[in-house]
Image (cartoon, rainbow, N blue to C red; front, side, top):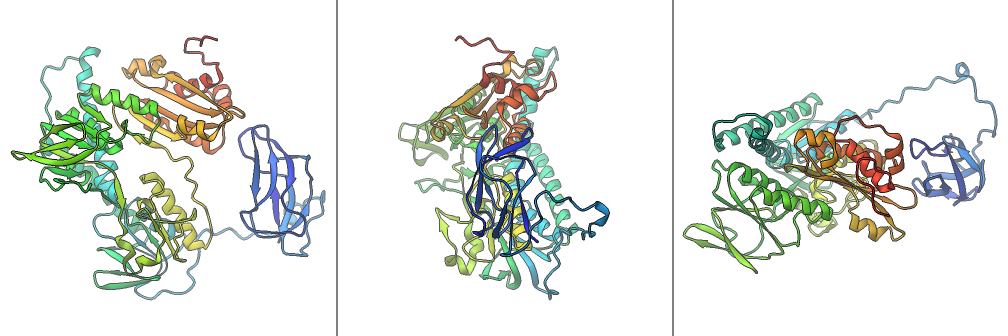
Length: 575
């Protein structure tokens, strides 16, 4: 049956589009995903991808025609296939042949023997357990291997443990601020670090237990042990072999240790070890001013450590917008941390048992040192056929469908290094599972992945930085900014520090990036992320979407209004 080519609805307000031109003629062969037409809307012009492969059978409209959304503009199908006559009356509902319900589950091709599976997943982190569960939901027989505890770095040694510490630090900040709100706190507070660690472990155990239960409820076979590939269809683990039609690699990452003299000093830790430390060091040195380094600096400053950050780049969290970096720098210094950017670490030497960070511009003596310079993909899972994979800069190369250079094998999460965040790993695992089970070529869209920094206040970002937006849009951009000090909810909550910054293109008002610092930035970033995915403009946010008052989220609408020069709750700009 011929496939309809319809005018797409690309945003909430789009009701019609204008055909600029057909990129294919009737009779031309068209591949699935190939551009076949260029259209123009009131906001943008774009090319449209073919939903199926075949031959272009008919063009019902031509260049210059204005076509309502969801209207059929042509057909793709087999050569010589008949297509419906334009303008023919649609059959009545009762005359239609009943359609079989679309079953999402895919029936296994053949009964699997013991040790044989439709899908094998190596790694039980965010990418791995999501891939396993999604594949099982689609009807596949699934085995998943995990050498430690399910949940991966995020649940066991990363996101969740650090956020638990940061919430403890937040309580300390609230206690310190209580006096100004009329709450009398008579006793000095202190931190019982063994209890802090125990509470963190309880949180981790709860969540890892939940993941294990989810795998069990979806009938995924969980195998404990370090697994790796024997060949393209065989996984080996603890002396046993498991066969699978498709394999999804989610081997995760490991902390990087820089190759400098003294890095093996007993007082030097990675982010894996510091979260089990049962004492608060008087002096904590942190090498690396990225997200993890800044978050642990914030936590241990609140716990009572004198924190020193040493960062090679010219600013902390240098991957984020410069305005966020500047605000984070202020926040860290306000907490008592010493921030030293533009310093290259040369060695770590010993001074009577204490580690000393030696840089090209000064030395810093500490009691403990945290190495926080990032994580590298763990390629152990590639096993005996590692040489068959395309690897670049220590990461497995994949296409947008998560396929590797080995036909039936996919790689997700930190292993491919595209975006090393748990929530992007979730999406990659889901896409890989869909493609592995269905045999489809669904692409993983990672254009709008938010990043969050859980300090006090929080920071969050999605899309392009201002610097990158100016580089990619030489025709010009608009920048709107709204300070949290002018937001009623922030003032009432005592969270006046921060801002929301919106970057949009000049021509259509498309939102290119949103960057914020504020009390609940990690929650607020969800709205601009969703709106950017739907191609909503700053005009629509500022003029059509009503936000609750008083609320933190009002600030986003105000920033969009500022990009248009119509912000109500900020002083008028001088013309």
